[in-house]
Length: 172
Ligand code: ATP
Ligand code: MG
Image (cartoon, rainbow, N blue to C red; front, side):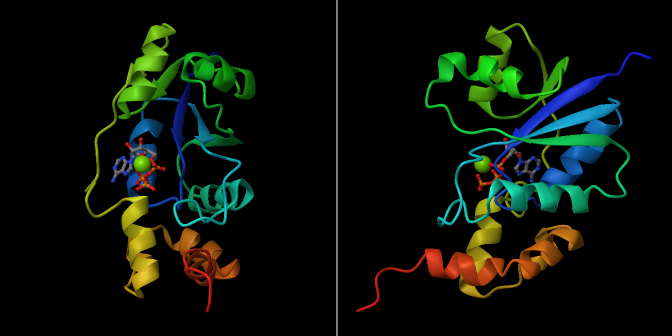
């Protein structure tokens, strides 16, 4: 049987309900989904607190009961946009369509003649990685912005304490 396999990329710092909702929408249109974990080499900094492996865990647990089989593939930054699509293709199971709303991602895949679809946005202001990290730092309630399974992973790895520590300046 021919599989319709799609590709979706994000940094997932952390994986939140906007990502989850997007994936549930994509799941209705394809059989399998490759989830590229961008900036995979980054962790332990204020914009990128979680390692690639921790992000794999978040995605695996969050999509446990979802209606799509997924492959989470860590993708390191290349700092060379012109060859970024071949870098992705070299690391990923084969796919025939890309879902993205990021203008650079869309441009690069279209230039490579890859079919791109734009998924709907889900409360982009409320559900964003930046917003989740901000709430964690300020001691606000962040759990409602991520799937329960993701909150459990973040608790298990001490994610909030880590984010606070890597966001602090030198102690006098
Ligand atoms: P950050 O604020 O850290 O950049 P982010 O919320 O933008 O986090 P990313 O991991 O950078 O998340 O994004 C992956 C993709 O997910 C982005 O291209 C973005 O378009 C999409 N996305 C982010 N938030 C939502 C949302 N609420 N609904 C639908 N798509 C979203
Ligand atoms: Mg973003």
